[in-house]
Image (cartoon, rainbow, N blue to C red; front, side):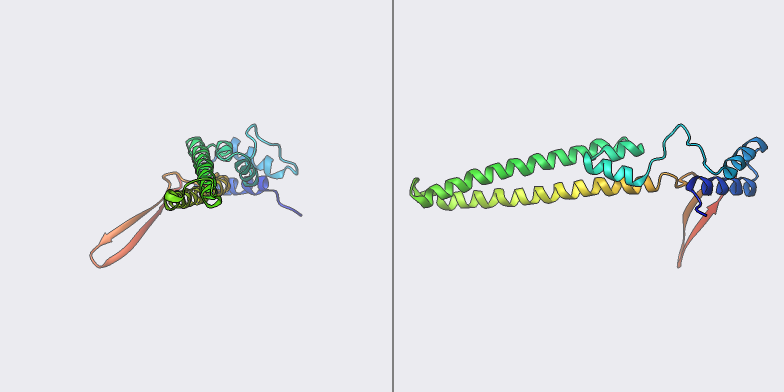
Length: 182
C-alpha cells in the first residue's frame, strides 16, 4: 500500500492538533475525513513540486522562484543571468576583434608596431570573457538549485514557536532550544 503525501500530512496534522490541543472538533473531523479518503482532492492552490520549480528555473532563470513564491529572488536571478550573458558576449566580441587584428599583423596586412598591445588586449578580453562565462554558469545553476531547495522547504515551519537561542556565559557554550505548542 502506497501512502500519499496528502495522507501523511493529514495524519501528521491530526496528530499535532491532538497533542497540542489546538484543533477544534470540526477541523479535526475534516482532517480525519481527508485521511480516510483514498483519493484526496487537491486544494485550490496547486502543489508546488521541487521538480517543477527546478525545470522552470532551468528554462528561464527566476521562473522557478516565481513558481514557489519567492518573488524578490526572481528578478535577482534573472538579471544576474542576463547581465553575465551580456558581459560574456560583449567580451567575446572584443576578443574576436583583437584576434582578427593580430592575425592581420601576422599576415602582413598591418604594421607590427602595435602587435604587443593587440595581444595584450586580446588576452584581456579572453580572460574577461571566461570569467563572465563562469559567473553566468554559476548564476544559472544557483537559480535552479535555489528553486529546488526553496520548493522542498516550502512546508518547513519557520514560525516563532520553534527557536534556538545561544546562551553565553563565561566558559560555557550552550544553546537553548524552545518549542511552543500554542
